[in-house]
Amino acid sequence: MTRRIVPGALTIWLALAVLPGVAAAQQESSVESSATEAQPRTADHSSMTVERVRDGFAIAPDFKVTRFNNTTGYLAGAYGGWVIDNTLLIGAGGYGLTNGSGGSSRSGMGYGGAVIGWMAHTDQAIGFGARALVGFGQASYPGTLTYVPRPPFPIPFDVDSRQSPIATTVSTVQATFHEHFFVTEPQADLLIRISPILRLDAGVGYRLIGADRGVNSQLRGVTGSVSLQIGGTTYERAARLR
Image (cartoon, rainbow, N blue to C red; front, side, top):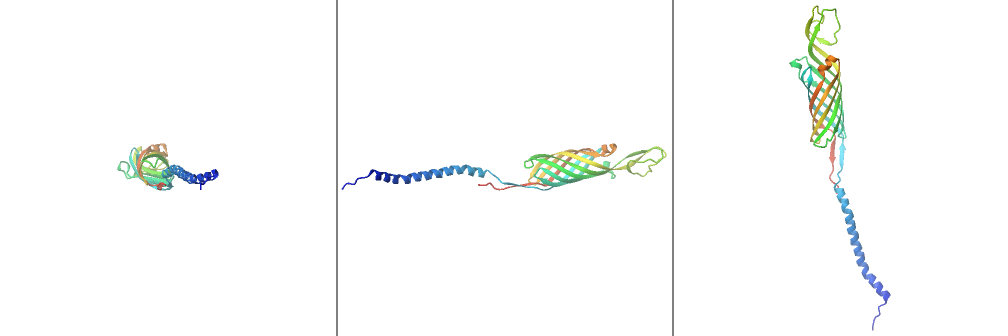
């Protein structure tokens, strides 16, 4: 008995035989395409980092060398305040003279006030910045005072002297002058990063004094300073995302 294959049935049989292979090929192509598309995304995620910035308080012991009453003076003090985004410092500071003029115990100077500063590249090994102090101070220093034989006259200073300010002959006496003054001290800084919370700050500035002209020249001058800044803004970096 001979079987006859109907053309329509042959077509159906061939379709059923080929379809599973086509479906498998399409599935493999879809998997490869998905893997190819996913690979760049994985690479992008692995190169991303999460960084948290936290503002904080900073304090810096500070030492200055300056001119005071035509001699070299040494000032010790500190400044500190709140650091915002590792860039802006808002706080206060104060300084006092540690050595007398020519070894005299009658010499002294102290001043303090508000401090505002700006910093850049503080997350790198070398950064820079600027800050300024605006406030008030008091100074005392020895000097000479010449008296003339005239009736009592006003003296424009608070004078400590063993001799009377009223003399019958021309005379010169040693006296100690006391002065209150307004001070502004801007300076430029070089920042050296030691650790995330420690920076060495080396700066050069100029102390401007608002006082009488004669006193002004005794108290104003260039300053050089070295300080160690502790604290401030910190960065926290999370692990890379994969």
